[in-house]
Length: 437
Ligand code: ATP
Ligand code: MG
Image (cartoon, rainbow, N blue to C red; front, side, top):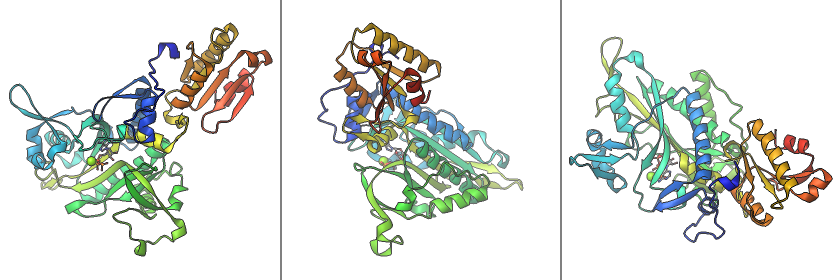
């Protein structure tokens, strides 16, 4: 992509309303624009990252054997009356009346709708277990939308739902999601800590929140430092037994929110205890028959008896993740994207506008990288080099290739690594190799 033909409305000034780094940087880098409180337009650069994050979330759900569908954003109030949540949900729910005076709502979550879909098609134990997900916009009329996409009112969520015959089988579905979550965050370049969460009146220990550490997190959390050193991507449990041992191992590390942390009873010695602010980027939950019982989601078993389905739900804040990634990975100059979600892998800058040799070399590098399947952003604008450097650092592409007349005379171009800041003068061939091409 040539920057002159792209739409990248970067801002020089720091927007006054943005209190945290990710919000500031997403606005400044031309990724999002606020349209109403907590409601954002995704500008081209932001959308590219959102799509990449979404793709990783999707791949890991598919890998875990969860099947994608797509439910609408608008739901009928009647479904929510069946579960009893229409009145309970309160003011966070955006309620809508259509021209026929029918009551609708913009979905804040989808337990009721998925239960309705499953109960209408699934009648036999032979169709169990069933694991479904979708990635869809949600609306919650948050009291205090803030921090940009971190706590929006309209936001993108991956929500999955599991249906099983009994609790033992539901635990397998839960464990598969647990693994998928850790893999997803690791692939996004994030260290997520699973923390036991409240299960409410249902009880049991099958609810975990996944927390990313960042200074601007909304809550204080504590964890065993050892967890932060681990790599989960090298673990590949397959059988239900292996999966259970994996979950037991991963949940064996101490981790607690401020409300749950008790210094006196903490099993981790003080020097191994890490305390930091945390951001919730996912939540998984087994809740048994909470929706299936009132909504009559049942199947006939082999012996002819009727079983009420055991359900779980599994949410990832897809749009919130962009904020979380930036909180975890930025510096004073701007964003530093992990490779896996970078909007472009390489940015090319020509230092002297109108220099024919530089332009030609830039196109040569651009074509070579594009031919190898790399996403490249070529800043061909008629701007001062300083402006281009600042914008390129701001949008945080992993690699920059800088081309100028002085280097070309020596037969070299410059390669800069955004994360380390290291710059090297290299031949074109070596420069391509350096960025991985
Ligand atoms: P929170 O305590 O932050 O309000 P929640 O418990 O309401 O979260 P869930 O209902 O479990 O969240 O939703 C699943 C995921 O969706 C959360 O883990 C979070 O990452 C994301 N999420 C929830 N609310 C918002 C929001 N207002 N804006 C962006 N993402 C959100
Ligand atoms: Mg909430």
